[in-house]
Amino acid sequence: MRILVVDDDPFAQRLFARQLERLGFSDVLTLGDAHNALTEIEQGRPRVDVVFCDLQMPEMDGVEFVRHLARMEFGGCVALVSGEARKILQAAEGLARAHQLRVVGSVTKPVNPGSLRRILDDCIRGGALSGIPETPPGQSCSPEDLRAAIAAGMLENHYQPKVNLATGSLAGVEALVRLRHPRYGLVFPDRFVGVAEAHGLIDDLTRAVLAQALEHVRTWLDSGMNIHVAVNLSMKNLESVEFPDEIVEQAKAMDIAPSAIILELTESALMDDARTSLDILARLRLKQVGLSIDDFGTGHSSLAKLHDLPFDELKIDRRFVCQATRDPDLRAIVDASLAIARDMGLRSVAEGVETREDWDYLREKGCDLAQGYFIARPMPPDHLLPWLVQWENRCPELLGA
Image (cartoon, rainbow, N blue to C red; front, side, top):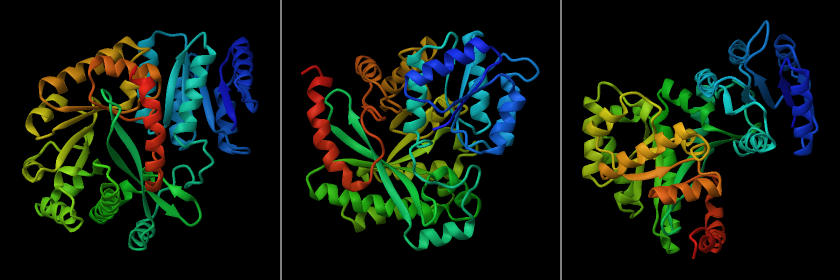
């Protein structure tokens, strides 16, 4: 794991290197010039995995540096560092995310080891440094490869548990699709879902994911686990009025109640012209299929969509949840989202629960369900039962029993 620190202050460079070494990371390169840093990344020998970048630098500031990283399609993790006001740091982080960079957070100066540890843990948990081979940075599957992969059954669902915060019981799982590539191993959905949407393959992709998920749910039901499964949808799936009937027919074929299915739609993807989608979403709810508004708070006209569309679950985005105990602004957003869900009669789900502090805070605030690395990482289906045994052993301590 190679870490690059870009900061024009020599003392800050030495402090960074010393703290990283104490955390067990010895392959650290410090540079004081952003131009040299870009050259180092572009050469890629050896590859840079994580970049810590100061915002306030002469000649090229951190915002400009981020823009160049995006142009280069940098595939590693990016963390921003600054002694400026917190709002400036948050704005720069939002810009980096808008550039589609893999942002794992920001830290204020003086940097402390705890902040560095959390950032690096996020890198590892996010798969960037896990050793799992994937497609090279910026490279997506071709439409031909994706079509062949779907036909050949190369899609694999992994599942992340969702647990009840009040009781600790397993409520359901979210299906997270991967593509098993013969050369690159597991390929994550950011490399092929956009291709599926652009080339008319999204319906085939969604059918394959749902069919696999229902097979696994049937197995879990037969073993005595009464849980639901959440499947992510594209708005492209809601262009055919036959879609609700297809969903119900797939569930019926596996002898599974439609209420065991939750379809998650990302808020930022919801269409402004909602006539056809509203028709389909209303019919799905009439057929008892659950609907969840995903990544709540990250899109536009959030409250209007909650009013107009028949959701019964609200998922709070991880970028708010995982920092809420340390950031009063984010805590206010989470508190407000939970209040909205409660007042509108929606089930609330917090994504990105990564620490015991997150867990305790959400329990205190009355959130219904939680998912995140503190509970479990996404796992193959045959790992769920062994995980559940371990989780049930953890629960008494987490619940104060």
